[in-house]
Structure formats: structure tokens, C-alpha cells
Length: 420
Image 1 (cartoon, rainbow, N blue to C red):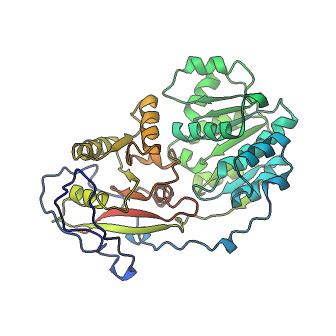
Image 2 (cartoon, one colour; image 1 turned 30 degrees about the vertical axis):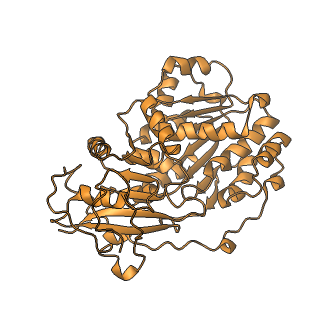
């Protein structure tokens, strides 16, 4: 059974129970025989009503990793004819074979085509556009690109990926322009030639209005996680930015899902794009998905701590719907002795970076966040995603659970569902 009835460790330390989650699909509706902690004095968190339009069957699926034979890779990195220093950097890092999205997208990007890259989270989309752009900039140092990302964390991670390949000797310069950091410092750095400007849409538009950015200088624009940017309400900023670009600017749209406004945006601004479609709106095959039923007699907080005390729960990302719910849950878990951090839009950029650093280094093994974290955390060893509160849309759910089961690893996604 998935839970131990031993409450002696209550709950300041992780339990030593050797039990594991039940993979038998016939018992999925009950998620195993847990003890009940009726009453219990815990607080309720977030809004009482959830997104009724989501069928709870969406949250139940057995992981079915695709056999390696079904992942068709037709190139090695050497086959693309990168500049010698890029080849050397990849070799130094032991990178020989590209991921599927890199395998299919790199050549069209190098050739200057508009590209739609649709692939799941954790599939290497960032290098799929960085590597060919770096090559083209080596051939023509006057080229430059703007990369737009929905969250500050994702923008910083893109810069980190860039720095893994480049160093000072290549003379590749970049500036990250995000909120929560001094804009005047960014304006100063923009006064030089930058090969890459990596920004969130709101800050980028602000810099345009301050005349710190000249749109006719960009040869390429990349919209990374474009669907999430639209979900977050950046449609006006994105249209404004795209309309200011020269018509011959190369446009690269990378995302995990496409629908509605995203598709309309692509049809409006892309010219004969090359489609690299490696996923549809389906959740990861590497993630076991199950529900945690919550009845009237259950204390939700106790159920959560019961899960967190299991040995197999090593590194956890917990989602709540609101910032207040995140902070309430953060305080309660901290009071019970759990090593936990939180992240949401009201946190300063410094606090968000410190929290992520602690989470990545295992100083804190639990991170609680709003949906801003679903596109802002790139940590390869998350074992469990817990939807403490329901996602609003199927796309939000897909992006949440995409934080686990990265690469060839198997992850768990558990969703709390009211059964009354």
C-alpha cells in the first residue's frame, strides 16, 4: 500500500516506510489505502472551486516510455557543419547526438527559415535555436537575436545555456532584460552591440518605449514557450513587438503546445515556416499520473505530508493556484520541519533566484509555486509533481507535470481531487 500507518515520525522527518505507490491501474481511483486524519486542525488553501471543465481522468495515466528505437535521430552534431569552436564546445561537454527537436530544427534555423518547433518540456528546445544562431553569428558578427520568454527564470536559464557553449574568447555578448532588476543597468548594457537580448515581453516593450532598443537591428526573433506567454496575457506586447520588426526578420516559435491564439499568431507573422512537430497536447509518457482523492473526512494537509514522508519522494514541486495559497502552505510545511522554498510573482527577483538555487542544490527538496514555476524551473531530478490545487487548463497541467520525468527518467504526478 502507498502509505504507512506509522505516525511516530509525525512529520518533522521523512518516514522510513518501505512501501511504494501502487501501480495497479485497477486501484487508481482510491490511490491506495491511506490512513485518514479526520479533522486535524489544518488550514484550507486557495479557492474552493476548481476548473470543473477538466475531466479527472486526465490526471490518471501509467507511464509508457517510448522505446529508443522510436526516437529517430538522423544527425550527429558534427553533421551540421557548425563553426569549429561550437564543435569543440560540444565535444568538451560530451555532446555527440542531438535530441529529436535539435535534430530536426537546427538545419532549418541555420538556413534562415521561419520555424515552428513543437516539442515537450525538457527536450532541448533551447539549444535547438541557440546553436544554429551562434553559428550564423560566427559567419556574420553583425547578426543579433532577441529571445522572448514568459518568465524571469526561463530567461535566466536561456542565458545559462548560452554561457555553457560560449566564453569570452568568442566575443559573443548577451544581456538579460527582465523585471525585478534595475532597468538602468540593462539600458547601459544595451548601449553596446549584443548578439543576444533575452527578455520577458513586458520589460522588453518598456525598453523599446525608452528607446533603449532599436528593432531594426535584429536578424532573428525567438519566442520561447509562446503559448505560455499568451496564457499569461502578453498577447498585446507580443503583437506590438512583432509588428515593429523588419519584414525579413527570421521568426522562430518554440513551444510545448499550440492552440487558439498561438496558432493565429503563427499564421499572421510567420512566412512559409518549417514545422518541426514532435508532440501534441498530450502529457509526458515518462510520468506516472494519479489522483489523491480528498473526502470530507480527510485533512488535506495531512494527506500531503503523508506523501512527502515517503522514501521515494526525493525532490518535489508542489503547485497551488494563488500566491497566498503558496505562502500559507510554505509556512505550514516549514513549521513541520520540511526543507521547503516557495516561488511566485510577488517574490523579488533576488528571492526567486535564491529559492531556485537552494532547490537545485538540494538544500531545499520541496518547492511550492504558482504556474509561473511550470515554465521557470529546469531541474532534471524532480521525482514528483504534486498538484495541491487543480490546474485551470489542460495545457497548464501538461506544463506542470513536464517538470518531472525529464530525459529518460520516470516521474510521478499526483493531483489532489475532491471526492464530495
